[in-house]
Image (cartoon, rainbow, N blue to C red; front, side, top):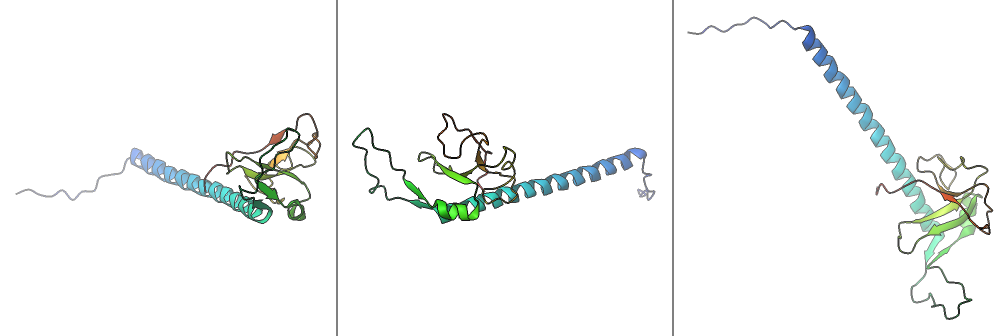
Length: 160
């Protein structure tokens, strides 16, 4: 017959250290998860804001209505129409719209502030946003008549 040993194992200092390390690791994980969720919600908020601006101000033209350019002097017609009056009713700093037909996910308003820091963490609507806005350099003219117009912006491709 075997006898069970009912004596409790005495905890060593190493056991306490491992418990503290485990608790610290769980705390770090929870903090990182919270920060990732916060970043995700900020990008989602920015994406939703730009989608609502796009729905309000952008009208896509029928491809059949966009005429071919016959003469070299004729200006090409963009496949989208932008309602700048409604954009400027939201924010007076809107100076244009950037659109790429080959990359339809690139369709954003362009703003210009007093300095180049104004729209780093501010959306085109003028509210705080981690996504920022596409903005023209403050030293460039708002009419895009300069030899070069420099645009700045964040990479906003989290696909949320």
